[in-house]
Structure formats: C-alpha cells, structure tokens
Length: 191
Image (cartoon, rainbow, N blue to C red):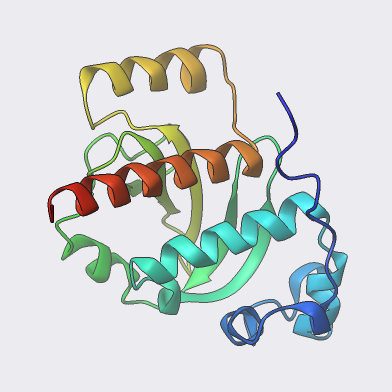
C-alpha cells in the first residue's frame, strides 16, 4: 500500500495556518517546560503534530475545542490523543449533548468518560480522573464499541484483545473515508 502521507513534514510554528495558531495560542505554553506556545509546538515530533491537528479539527467540528484549557501531553503513535486540563464546564457540555454518552466510556484506571455516538470509526473518547483539579484525556478509538455489533466486535478484537492502538495515519484515513461516505450519501439524497 503506497504511503499517502509521504508529503507530510514536520512543521515550525510560523508555518502553521492562522486557524491552528489561534486554536493553540495559550494552550501549549508550559508543555514540557516550554516558555511559549511556539517553542512547545516545535518540540512535538511529526506524529504528535499531526495528531494535534486531527484532535483540533474534530473537537472544533463538534464545538468542543473551547473546553480545552491547557495541553499537558500529546501523542500520535501507539494511539492518537492528548492529556489536558479543561474548563470546569466540560462535563456539563458533554453531558448535555445527544451525540455523546457515558455508556462504556470508563476505563479501569479512570473515574468516568464520554464516547462519541453515531459513527462506527474514529470515535472521540474523553476520560477523566477525579483529582483536584480533574484530569482529562482524549483519544480516538478506531472502532466504536457502541455503533453496531460489528463495530463492537472490531473494537474488542483490535483495541482490547490485540491491544492495537492506531496511529494518526490510520485515524486520518478512517476519518477521510467516513467523510467521503457521508458526502456521497448527502449528495445522492439531493438527486
């Protein structure tokens, strides 16, 4: 299979789009001791940078990026996600949404969480640990344990039993395919 991401390169802060710089302003400073958002961003490897772009895109699409206060860690290999401190309203914001649920969202080492509903692939999964302040994390699950029996089986088989954690390339492919299917469905209903 050809690498459809061969063109992706490590970026420096000035190369970011204005939208990405605005989304990250004030959220990266302090990450690994960095004194500015720019210096923090430039310490991220390619996998972490690309993971961050996917996270920003999906959370912005769901109008949830504003709930992120500070990014404490980010990764794009061995899973795609980040740890963050959140504004106190995040739990009520997620609880009020019909496209998120608490069902099956908790892990053994967490106190709660929220799963995105409505899609079989590239699912947003928020987790929290009750500390002061509450610690939040977010990652993408490649397959949804909630969407259908087939996607639940795939989730169990890949992510639980085999402990396969998708990298940012796999999540991006799944999101692109999902958007293509949604676009095709939407355009065929207007014919």
